[in-house]
Amino acid sequence: MNISDIRIRKVMQDGRLKAVVSMTVDNAIAVHDIKIVQGDERVFVAMPSRRDEAGVFRDIIHPISPEARGEIESRIINAYERYVSDRQSGSL
Image (spheres, one colour):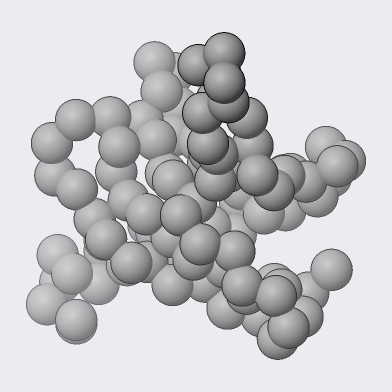
């Protein structure tokens, strides 16, 4: 798997939702509405989901292995941190 692009689409200042991100894999598949969330102990990545008939949220797309999840999460969080840092320094 090659994550070819990560775009920070929207950044929020208030609340636990910090950003909404899009990711491109292998220059062929785009995944939208990935969320960066401030948890109780750390920032984490929540994959796109929708509510089923029972009211339970289910991921639409998600990594299968812990290694893939770790790679995706670390790349997205690093891109978000760079984006925030660049905004604070006036680079964007």
